[in-house]
Image (cartoon, rainbow, N blue to C red):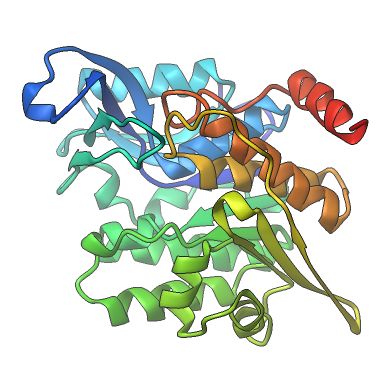
Length: 326
């Protein structure tokens, strides 16, 4: 897509990796055949929103290698605007290998991302971004975990988007192994969350980040620090919403959708973010937004791959109509 085309209305940033998924269960040491896909929480959300018809931009770096070429081609085929995807001549594209889990268990993954091109992202990577055209920014806690320069980029992106009047969603997406300390992780991510409108932690993430135990207390932690709404993922039980509407506060729990067979749990939270963010941008009510988040999250766990279950707008419309009639 040429730089002369309209600037993206939505923007995401982070690290996309080439992923190899085992074709059979068992330890990776014993697996001979893999399927090639892409991985990355930020790209999952970007792809999900693009499939729903939004003009989504992607900001990142990939290496001068075939894996970087594969990522760009895959993202562009999904409709993403990759004008802010930089080719880094000095560092490689990150890789990830994922086991084929059984019985709904979380699959184990092995990363090869240290020193990757994306870990060298910095505020300068955003110098060509037209923030004045931006309607919404989606951010996660993964880029600030990659390096100090990527952490500076994360803060820069949120500050620029807020100054331009765009709405901001933030999913902590905790990766403790990437941080030097738990305290650094907590302080950094909580700071970013306080500069966001919609905060989307899982229950365990919220407990670790805030020191609070209940969904209500976790939500209050962020609402008291500037967030407009906090939507907490509760796994199979659904999700909890608490938000400020003027002088009033609204809160509720929305039950999850039943799933016959859980195939792959990776990407469920990203699907949830796609649902909530898209509905909010569609002007839907908080109840409709959380319900859509639960719905798309349930679709994501019924297929192999991180983003293969994310629906098109037509399929989403059909599913929402079907469940509303029940």
